[in-house]
Length: 332
Image (cartoon, rainbow, N blue to C red; front, side, top):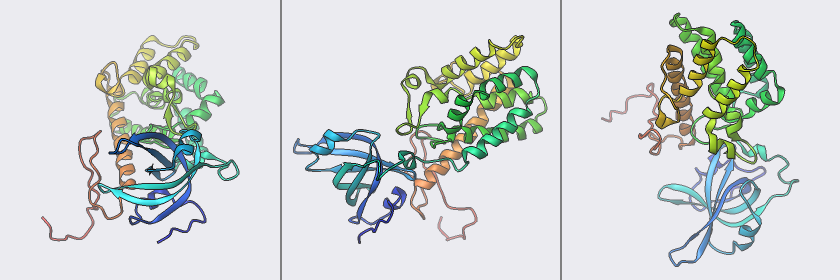
């Protein structure tokens, strides 16, 4: 069967086609390399991406021009057929060429986007900032998010490269989701310092604005790889606090501790473990929100009707997707 493409078929749909189906269309090239065949001769291997996911492609022969003219980040036109190897879908390509600007006017269309629009996120962010009444924390947030260049980057930065909230706008989606959780838990545990919790939530991942980029794809910046988002976030917040007259020393110390400890363990990137109630609570809210989002991303990549996901190495388990409301099949 030939896939007729008035517009490019999303890769999520491509992956579910039968072996041998013809596939052609425009995608974003995110990796390109060569590997040896069993004979020792090279073949071309690429990774293609659109808003729905990624897929691997191979060119066994006649790939010299593609290797010389293409690089990661290029929008490309490909032609080939779907194949499956060890149950994993991939493309066997006969054509891979760079797309023109007329064919692909906006490469961002290939990137996954948050379901929360930038306008919606900006409006919610403004309301949250206005709700913080402690004067020094309020001034800190107004100073940071009042910088329109920084605010625009905060609204478009991904929350991660691959594991959770890995979309354009994923950082603010993750942050606002955690704010909603923080509001609920502060209502349940009144001993929590509400404004410190909300401020810490808004700023815990603020370093990702410098750590991650969406140009030409979701990727780490060189500073992100060298310094990490926790270091970058602490440096940014500490610098901004230094510009605020009379910022209380204890409040500064506890806010910075939240940022430093939010990943929980040194093995996970935090130089210190959470040692205040607000830091401990925020860490678990971060874990909850990131894992629920990761679960849903894996579910979206898994074929419809499949009970279990592939093995998830980061969590050392499979995910199970059957609804508890499904009728009993009688299976044990």
